[in-house]
Length: 145
Image (cartoon, rainbow, N blue to C red; front, side, top):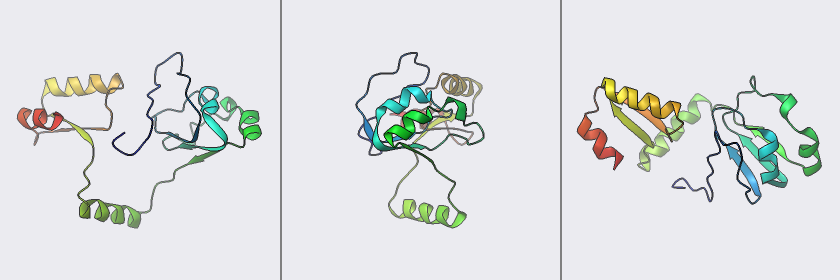
């Protein structure tokens, strides 16, 4: 929500997906493709599904309900990686506006690595996890607050 979304729903691992109001644009950022028959009813007629992280190689076209997409005019689009110059421009913009990444940091200890790996397996890492020897227990605890 801090990034400007009006709604956020984590649906991973749920057998029953909540009944949501429809949206004009559905942004999918999951590491795996969703069950398309569950998410298509969330999108308004003429809407767009932006699959930011769905690998086209793994995209299972057999699981796409094409008739629902066609009859409702729903478009599925994918994001391509930005060119190197655009990455540089984005980094300059972020530095100028003092925009920092949203990360969870873990010290480079056996216990912290186990905690980080468990959180990753359980799907509890929300943004990015960073493990480093430069991070002390004190700094890690201070950053989490």
